[in-house]
Length: 170
Image 1 (cartoon, rainbow, N blue to C red):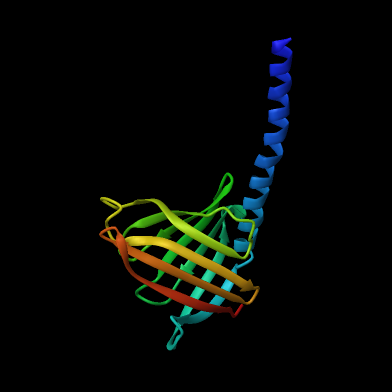
Image 2 (image 1 turned 45 degrees about the horizontal axis):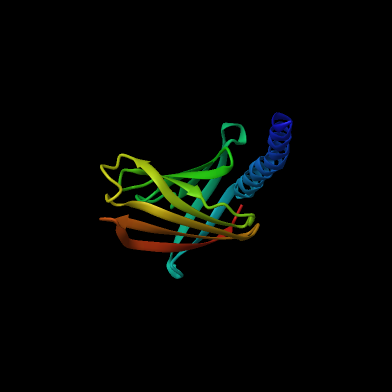
């Protein structure tokens, strides 16, 4: 009798967990689709300083399984960010002009318009105290407006940051 109760409890537990895993996977897929919809050319300004125009381009790659963001194109500060799914999460790798590559994971959320990416690890870093991009935030206001911000860390503390306000041009 005890084994039948135990087996029933296990089956009920499996039925309760299975929809949760599917919902998480679907949520990550829907959030990634919102990033894929950014494909195109964007222009904007850094920190609301309207002197220098910043050009950004999002491109779908690898059959739509990755999105590349070319940031500050046409300048000596051009950088690359690559977004992809990793199971139930949306990931971002930032290829920085300081020579390292921060990997970040988006905080879980049902909001498909706002992303908070936080540092998980990186390559070409001796330690996490080396200068690197530590956080990136994106807010998709609509299909024509995007706000991005980032924070750099150095010696384990925030050292600088910036905000980009972008408008789709193509």
